[in-house]
Image 1: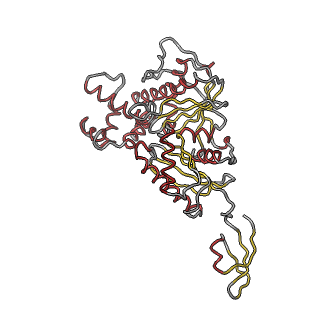
Image 2 (image 1 turned 90 degrees about the horizontal axis):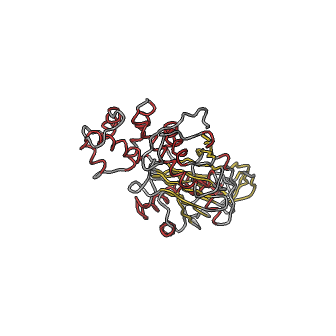
Image 3 (image 1 turned 180 degrees about the vertical axis):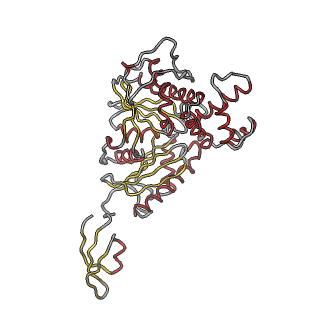
Length: 400
């Protein structure tokens, strides 16, 4: 902040962070103060990280300093509609502007939306137009992209992979030369393998099939069934039907995965098996895209709460990569910050401004896959076809 000295009418105090009155008389006074910021000359950029459960928004200045933040519910327009999505984005934007001391009618220079479900260019343009239509002062430019784009821009702006395993799942790769490929991201009815909804669904389906005698489960089901009844306040199978149909809430249903994670930590074999299946499913996403790109080393940005159960995902992950013959070295990283920062960085880039960006400060490496250290044993694993068997070698010290 810089020192500012001038003569102003007394009411000028509202423009300053602090005011010291040295002498006064009449309608003016002599003041020494520090500007919060020179709003007339400061550029503002916003970014939104939007998932199927919750969303985050940040506003930063031209130096990349975060001025205001806000949180909100899911912003997938396929689930909440175009109007609902735009309204949720604007509610977060107005809250963040207030926190940043930016008048609501002062537009950002650019606003980047990196949202779940934004895979289609035509609908992305429609959403951007809807935001401007509802609030012409929201931003001078609104850029809409997939949620994977924000994560990649945050931790691997020069190329890499994003593998999302939150409520759902999605995978995206961009090479240093700019080639792009995607795998998954089709929602819970057509995909989302390895995501929290998928994990919860597989657990409950395994129990139903076992109880009905359709498919005998290879693992004891008693502990998982007990957790199911507690979580859904159910006494029998029929009591779950309202949660699946009439009163279906995907976020709530997916939340059961946390209970499975707790059981896996306690050693429950069915829970561990299902997480290993999820690890194999996520590895299948990665393998599908790696084979399309000639890269010997790749940073994989792992986004979503399912990755918190990495130790239980790892066996399926390793055996799937070995089965697919993946030869690339994979550096798995977690974000330290919201990918909303990456969305803001992309928005600035779209209006030809380069925000300061130190991606090394935005992530932590939690695992490195060295393909030469893994060999597929006979009978260990079949390539992923919706089910991974969870076989794999134990790896120590966080690397292989």
